[in-house]
Image (cartoon, rainbow, N blue to C red; front, side, top):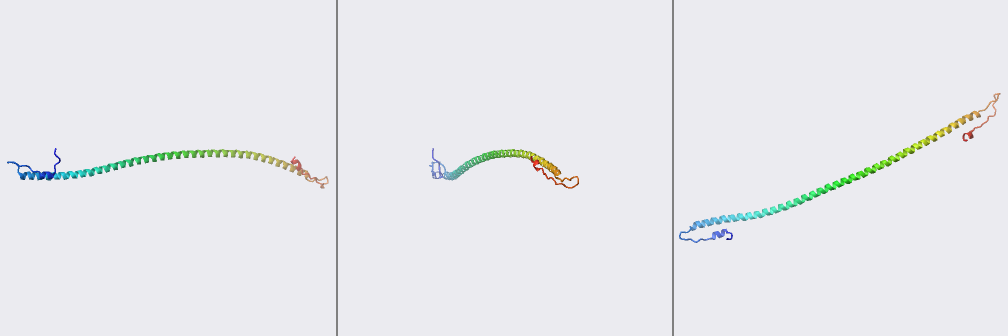
Length: 179
């Protein structure tokens, strides 16, 4: 098989003429036309090859961009998943801390309530003790008042049968109140 035919080879091609051979003008005209057609096709072919290379390069660039976008999307997805996981863990920590705080507050409230119950019991005990002491004091003062009234009756001056005052006996009787 022959190598590729170029327009120059077509133009330089010469045919042998015979007795009744081909018309040289027609053959030359046809060869010129064929050479022009092949030259145009070769230029188009070269242009298409260049365009094909350019499109191949663009395709390669687009594939590289696509891969880059895929990596970015995967990384974004991973970051989003990590953020979601971090948010979930953070919320779990917050809930756990809230539960601990709530338990601490409840314990504090229970301790405060117990202390208040103890204080109320102590105040009731003090109230009973105070009432008992007050009653005892009232009773002692009542007895003192009774004694004082009795002594007043004894210390009032007595009159003799003539109506003259006699020497009054002043006996306070305070010693008897504390016996």
